[in-house]
Each structure stands twice: as structure tokens, then as C-alpha cells.
Amino acid sequence: MLKIINVFSKKDLNNTKWFFSEKTIQLLTGIYIVPQIFNSLGSADIGKLKLVEAIFAMLSPMFLLGLTAICIREIIYYPKRSNFILATTFYMQLASCLSP
Image (cartoon, one colour):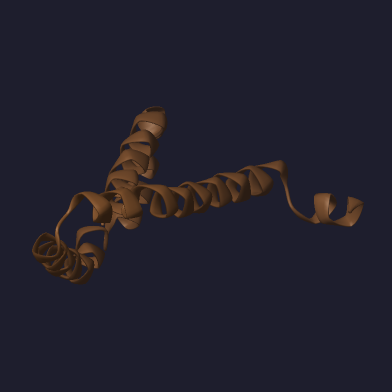
């Protein structure tokens, strides 16, 4: 265990924790909210919902295609605004992963 801590920095472990927590939130959201949505919709409305989800799933990679590169570029040009840039990127990605 000590060798792992020496190989990876504290920053790497913190990044791993954030990534793991993001995936956990996505999983829990999918488990608890999706069945509630299906229970409240009728069969015709579920088909419409699935169509919209399919269209959005095809288009969503284009929405976030350059977000990481733009974020890195802006942090390099404006290091004092890095917290604002990272927060904005986080909320944009959060909105995109919660929308399907």
C-alpha cells in the first residue's frame, strides 16, 4: 500500500476520487430516477422519450467534443480564473450526463 501512495501523488488520488464519485452519482441517478420516470409515463410517451434519448445520444459527443481542449487552453491563458473555468466545465458536463 505504501508503494502505491509513493507512486501516485495526492493530486492523482484526489482526481481518482472525483472520477469515482461522478460515476457513482451517475449510477445511482440511473437506478432511482429512471424507474420513476417510466412509472409516470404511458407506453406511447415512453416511445417518444426513447426517440429523444436516441437523438440526444447521437448528438451529445459533438456537444462536448472540444470542451476538454477548450478548458485546458483557457486555464493556460488565464491561470487566475482556473477555478471559474473548472467549475463551469464541471457543471456543463454534469448537465450533459444528467440529461439522458
